[in-house]
Length: 315
Length: 77
Length: 233
Image 1 (cartoon, each protein chain N blue to C red):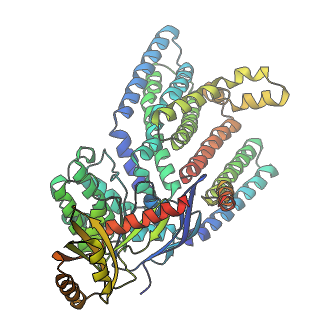
Image 2 (cartoon, rainbow over the protein chains, first blue to last red):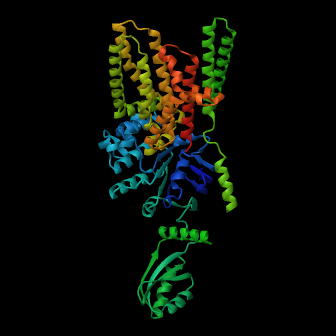
Image 3 (spheres, chains in turn blue, orange, red):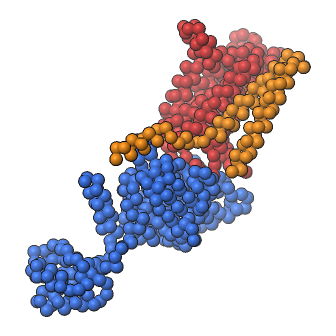
């Protein structure tokens, strides 16, 4: 299956400033991609280029098979875009706004009413349909903005910080909605909030200063697992005992209290190594009070990548 | 692109109309007033042709500032 | 319905749901009616010439208020992103805003048509100058709206847009009086750029096609530049 979004060596300059530097990635149909990065990292710029709002300085971008520069209109028809801060026309009522959006996106006649009703039901907007957009709360504004993006059932949905300013209930509702779309639609969402991306995205891309640090933050090249063990005893003894076990790749220490230390052990997956560790430590008289697997932490990966990058920049 | 095709058609049609009216106006067959009106009509249509041509200009002209900055960045490292 | 007509409908709704349109209409009518009645009683002449000159000035003062929000507000509220990520062109957007503003101008002109009606009932006015006067005002309105729209396209701040348009109008209004100060080729240029020089003949009854051409050129040029200003993002 061909990717629904294909970005190749995308670069965007704003005058002397390079906002996006040589970014390349692909999105397969049905994926939920989380674009993680601090403010100013270029997430919004990339989205604006994907939606045909801005043109790339160089590189090619294809959405649903159409080039964003040559076939901008076709791209815009296939993309539903929810910009940051959910911009709406303040003077319009919600139903008017949705009908307006349906019309400029090319829907005609009865299709307009059907699309508006469907989107309103999906986003639970029936209560506010006749309210002026200017009077809506942040949560409802966001929902109206998402509703307008869904009107034409686009192949790609692009959401820029969709949960910012929402209360926990609304955050969960938006999250569930996005999850329900996966499969038939591809979703790209940008956020600087790690925990949100972690929970929704099937794949996480990390962006910093316009550069894509990784197109899949959760991918690990090794099959190793990381174990955390709480062991009391002399560090050197622990290290030598662990090093002797086959299947243990690396050991590092996280000091917690004076005598008690957390050791981070990178080892082969499976129960054999864990059994060996337990037996070896007990045989040496060392106290093992905890042995758990630590999952590859997105936060850790983010910090590693960004630290490495700033390390490179400093060098 | 369908748009480009129809645009070229519009430009050609308008240009021909402008030329035709201009010629008729200059020919002075029906008296001064009519000639003036025809010439004016030709002029208006020519203006419209310029406008349509202007709309056809690429919206973003690559190069210039952007290109210069990119080259500077490459050299600077 | 084409994209343009959808946008036009939205612009009309936005314009007439804002108090500015009504404020402009009220002020316009109050001032013009007062002036018309007073002059009529004093001069007993069935002519609208002075009215046309006053509307000329009033247009220059009120058009910036009408046009300042057109594109500056969309930029400020970021709804321009919503529009330009939909299958509509910059030209559709600019034309819709232009036509909607012109509809207000046309309404103002029609409302002031009541003066012509009054003259017709009580006297025997010379209709030539009246028709040409309205034509001149319509063309002037189009040119002014074009400039105002361009100013609005260049900034996200409505105040700046209004100030820029107003300054340009004032400049183009008085530019001919400085014409004599300039050396030979430029004095003619200054005079021919002047709004008042091109409008005056309409008010007194002469329709010069060159004047019509001036206003049409300004209108088309400003629309073209507005489209390009929108595209520059």
